[in-house]
Image 1 (cartoon, helix red, strand yellow):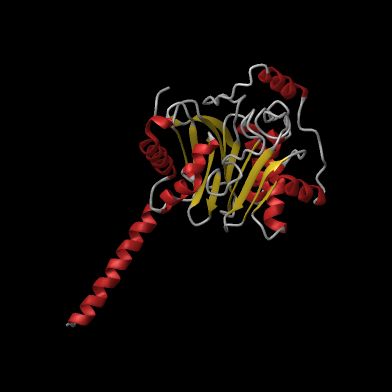
Image 2 (cartoon, helix red, strand yellow):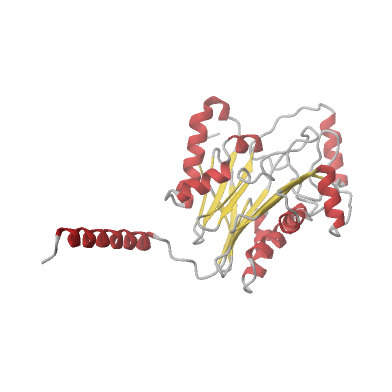
Length: 323
């Protein structure tokens, strides 16, 4: 016959086993292959480049740097890298950050003359004791690491800037890709290693020196291999206010799915900002450490690209407010 002490021990053991069983049964099964997701439709080509590495068993960190290098070097993409629209002084300044599953991270802001800021951000992470380098210091570091100094202001971007100067009106518009945008990318490799990157030329016609959310760890990007990762697009100032990507990851940590976490952060933002939220766009993209994806935006228009098991497609995100 069990003593009261033995009965309590047995009850506790059964309780722990029951909870463990529920947690295990509720954990999503890992995907049978790698997954890579990115913001916007031009993420399709970026995903394809990343997939070439992931599908051969490569490291997610290598994949994302190679992936976003595609729009960074494409002069037709006016919001990232070469060909990005300049600030109101006619200077193209780039921002980027990168993060792996072990909380290692690197960032550059207000970087000029270098086509691939995401690759520079990785070297900040791997070769310096710092997380962020800015301006002249970031450029000096990039040149020391072998990057070439190039003119980022294309004839098309310069013509657009000169046309803007005629009125010099600064009015960010939701989903107007010619004004501002980013590419954020998250990837899970075959060894279940998660990594993320965010890179942009920032808002067109911004004040020189302006920095948005894209190079800020926790705002434009956050990754934690124990939980998942998130990245953003839209009006950077608003993303910074709510530490958007970190908020999404913490919502997943509390038990929400990637989709529910994105929705919760957007809804909380709208509740806090009220009328100040109207006319602004916030877009969130997340992936948990099992490869399950979620996306949500404040206003309609956000699309994102997903490559899972070799199927590359663009999806429309659900949203909170009508235009």
